[in-house]
Length: 502
Ligand code: NAP
Ligand code: MG
Image (tube, rainbow, N blue to C red):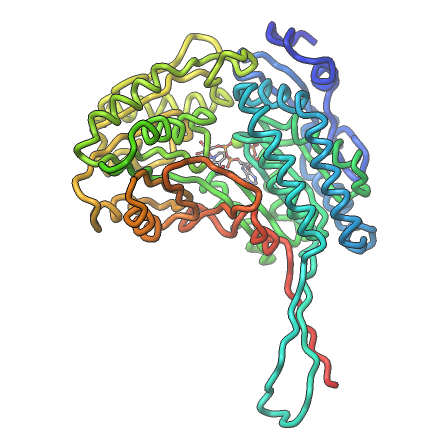
């Protein structure tokens, strides 16, 4: 298959991976979709087709869920000793690192992100997640509880809790960090002893499929992990509604998150959600601007703004406003935009035509509503889904660019006078609550602001710092539950109370 000129830099395993149609993984076997259909996967830098993958629909969902159900009800995985499970999880982490270059190239090719970022962040973080979770496999514990039951005076009980895997889990993930989102989801669900059907985003299925093979290579028994490539409406929806699924874990838009809740409501499946954001990033006059300016720039432009935690509303205290506006604008102008597989590129294309149209639509709406474009504001080049890093000012609280998640490299810069209740009110004036940033040399003030912000993560004098041990998730409409840290295990465990009369 002719897969565009930048293929020359791809290594042999990547080339052979994309050259064959990729099948779905069901019950430990790679197989075509039941209807025999496939769909195309694109390189967003060139708009060229790079691969074909199985177009899985309800019939495939039924097979995959049945396989996961059998693997849970009868298979070895939930019954295996925790240390054996932990060793397999650790081995998955090792295999990710052993295949780092292949995974990084595949990710950059499919998602568009700079190859250097995929090598330094996406792939090592995915490995870390499995290594971190591997340690938890042996540390899932209940409690013993002393009872004082008023209507059985003198009786004694031995009461304790067990944490048990929740069962068959459907996991639906987005395209912004395709491998890492798969790792965030799979690491804990497997650690808990559940079985799973994973649906990667239609735009970016390749690294999830490669990861699934690594999971099999590491010794994961058949049926424990099933991967269906397909579309939201025809694959994701029947998966989220399937009566044999016990729990749905979703990452993506708040809009689809609400559909997931509806789909799960029919039989009250458990649901966790990691959704959008419109995160405030606050620079105080006493901040070290030599750190805050590049930090605020990274907060929005990292991953082309396609981050649920992007610092998209940049609040700057009055005295520093001009300097920060100029500094972030200069940083935006200096970003080298180009194909992710070009090692010189610092920002790649948006992931897809749909996303490109969405983001450029927001840029038009901002201009129409009266926002001032300080830098950027339009398409970059005429091939591929590139958008200029964009800085807006003069936005009001009512504008769509201020209120809605753009999910592109677009920041609105907003002045404020005092560090007071009004600042906190403005920062919290969003339906979302995923993340926030504070830049200040006064730690006392910074921590007070952090406490007042209604967000699941607050970074002080840094941004976009992720670690497998640090819980991540949203307040308000940014989601339910947490990813990572030991807290994520709660997403996949039930608590059973056992009470014996002794
Ligand atoms: P999305 O529609 O929420 O997609 C996320 C996942 O859900 C994909 O796997 C998608 O499949 C699937 N899906 C879509 N409709 C579904 C349904 N009815 N039932 C079950 N699953 C369904 O996100 P998107 O369309 O790719 O991006 C739109 C916007 O979402 C972005 O502009 C951004 O604002 C937000 N977003 C947020 C995050 C985040 O990390 N919080 C990540 C990505 C996007 P398909 O691949 O077929 O659509
Ligand atoms: Mg989509």
